[in-house]
Image (cartoon, rainbow, N blue to C red; front, side, top):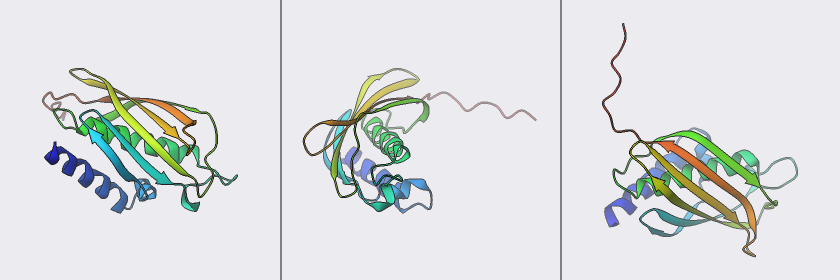
Length: 147
């Protein structure tokens, strides 16, 4: 598990040091991880906010995408996969300055699809958002190039 944990840490670091949108998740801290399950925390800052000073829905989606992918890495064959479907229910706001906990887990891992879930909780343990995320992790040969 130590090698897998290192791989997950490398994945998170590569994401937050990239030039893309994922860099906004640079405040994520890993709290615990076992195969198929992990908890993280993050303090909502101004770069994460919407026009009302709360955690932006797009940032919530980014957290779900990144952190469910991190738990997918913990299970063989240790591939990130690509998103097929994501659904998020936004239940209450998380204000700038508030610390949230994100729990992510693998629900079912099939041959080509993996089903994950995530919950974002406020400091009182109340749901901020609840999500499901399906990823394709097919391991077949790449499709032939059509010329």
